[in-house]
Image (tube, rainbow, N blue to C red):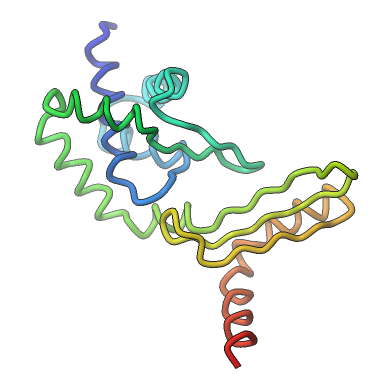
Length: 172
């Protein structure tokens, strides 16, 4: 395989991350590029890995997902090579992102992770986000890793109820 298709895959990924209003899971980025039939999963994953390794994309890992965002250098690189990515490809990606905007936001608007503290406890952090903006975040310290995982796993189903309750309670 020549370097040209790989560069196009990288440009598509940079464009996807540029157009996204928030960090995306690696799975979401790979789904977009493969759903549009630009390449297969393996080549897309390799291109994304190259972008992370070169510092054009940054990766943040939680216990469940890896989130990726465009770095400043990645944005500069995207701009420098923007004309090399065809208008048709950019339009198709933009239409796909617009059409699937709800699914993209659903994946990235609820973020949870946990970390072990210096004293051997665990802090579970759960946040509700609108793009990069944090609407609501809670940090709970618990004694066991199992409890921290349970909190993180429950966040998706309980976040709306907790957020609503907090607003009602605090705005009285």
